[in-house]
Image (cartoon, rainbow, N blue to C red; front, side, top):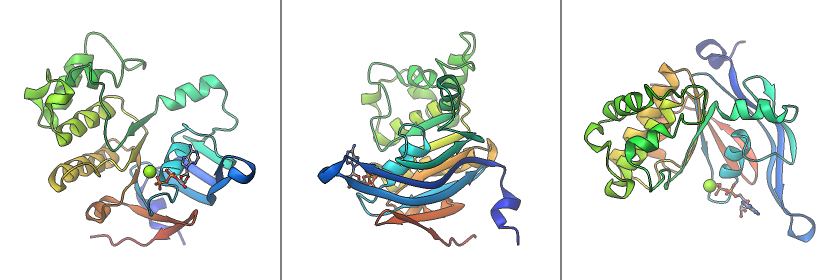
Length: 239
Ligand SMILES: Nc1ncnc2c1ncn2[C@@H]1O[C@H](COP(=O)(O)OP(=O)(O)O)[C@@H](O)[C@H]1O
Ligand SMILES: [Mg+2]
């Protein structure tokens, strides 16, 4: 039988096979992840839940190429990260964008400059249109009048919307969002996850999102729960 995911979504963007991770060595060794197997396809939003300290951030940083697993394989856009040379890795990293709980913006840049920073070092950048695109995206997110504001003049929800615009301008294939709504009120959190959902379905990217917030579970196309280092599929209810 074919799984529904295989029919509805595109090819895998990121895949983990038999991934293990521990920190430290000897008496200090802490085993965090055991035998993680998962894949996230184009258009999918995978929600990762689990108690604090269960390894969510560790898993997200491994999937996002920021950390090498102690064992196992991670494939990104079909390429095995363990076999990729430094140039391939740079190219792959340009296809990923990160969103954290807070402090996503550079305080010395205005909102529009922060958005432009999302393409600055990529082949997508062009001096003639980066600013225009950045302003357009801020407008889509309801922040047209905040383009020249400094981050500390913006609310947490507004800052996170600027951070989303910075993600969007880079046209990523994979978005890694580590508790992106946990510092936000309900309404701002909703705006952020709805935008991620839109990006996944319209821009055909994959999103891996960790959260404690059950009010946003509905955006998931798939959900896993980590407990004691092991990852379990949680059935989701489609509406
Ligand atoms: N850099 C590190 N060095 C040593 N231990 C770490 C490090 N990062 C995380 N840990 C430990 O790994 C476990 C999982 O942490 P983490 O992945 O941050 O979990 P979560 O994001 O679910 O809260 C915790 O016990 C934490 O203390
Ligand atoms: Mg964490």
